[in-house]
Image 1 (cartoon, rainbow, N blue to C red):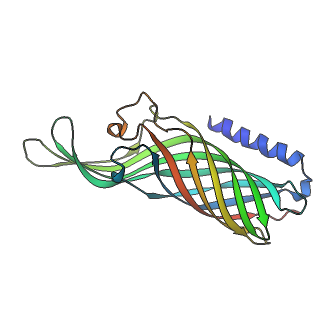
Image 2: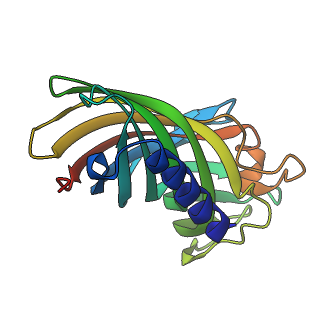
Image 3: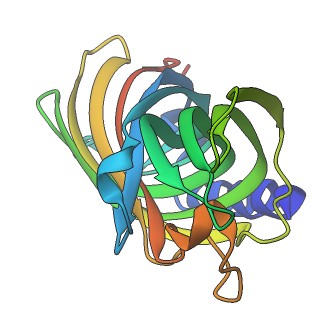
Length: 230
């Protein structure tokens, strides 16, 4: 599916290019950070905090109007989303007390297709986004105290998660504002969200069922650069 997303983005860009003069098309790069968390009906919501993650990739800008006021801009971005486990104690099914803390990362390939307005350098952009879950890794520490007392045990995990219980394909949206200089350098603030839950509906054990109705959500802060056309 990852290759399918790349091909789809390439086809969208090619179709857009065919509708404009080749010399007006500008390719570019984007890099920045996600400030992500979860949205939706989340149990024990206060235990899941925001976390920072990297985003970066490529884009192509195709003008719809000759003056550059309106354009279409597909992008292909590697995007780290997820959440931080706030240090929290709870009692498991065996009566033992367990404390959980750390980060959970979800590594996505995001393919937004944006309609972009450039009004004298001020940018407004919005559009749909397809996302594919590449992998997930868990950096969590568990401290378990036996139900009858005794010495607590500490378990640390820094490994890839099994993603078979997650929905790897996701449809969502992206919207933002920013400023673009005449040389193609830009600063953008965006918000991206998903229309569907990322945990499969029949998976009731993931994080003790807390995230069965959770969706990814992130604010994005990024720098972009559109290479001047010849």
